[in-house]
Length: 81
Image (cartoon, rainbow, N blue to C red):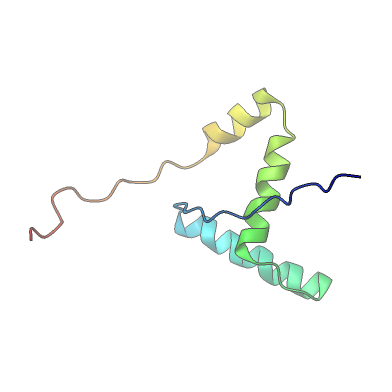
């Protein structure tokens, strides 16, 4: 029997709104209280990706359309070097 290769973790950077980060933190606390163990932020994001991938395209479009649009920040605010 051939061994299956393990799926390796990769480092991935995402930008979240403060409210989304607060929601992840609240989920971590809720899971900790209910299950007795603390999920990492990475665990929660990975579980969310799996749940999202199981949706139909129409459901994905509706959810993505409901996301708040983050502001890009102030232009020209960077100091020149």
